[in-house]
Image 1 (cartoon, rainbow, N blue to C red):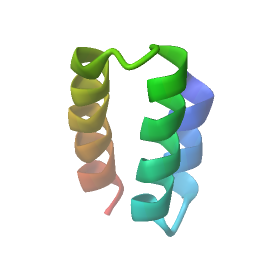
Image 2 (tube, rainbow, N blue to C red):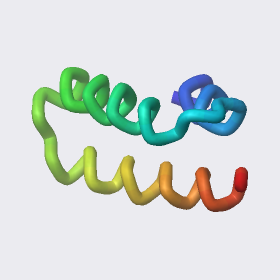
Image 3 (cartoon, rainbow, N blue to C red):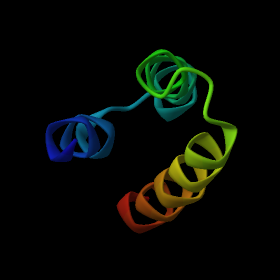
Image 4 (cartoon, rainbow, N blue to C red):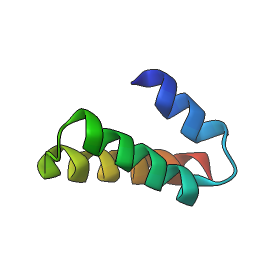
Length: 51
């Protein structure tokens, strides 16, 4: 999981990666929406720090 966060922070296209990351989470969690929402919140925080 930490590798994916690192990938996000060095990328210049967070929006595209959001969709890919969230889609991957959807597959891994088998549609666990609560987990997806927490993940989106965490990624928003990471993106704000990186800007």
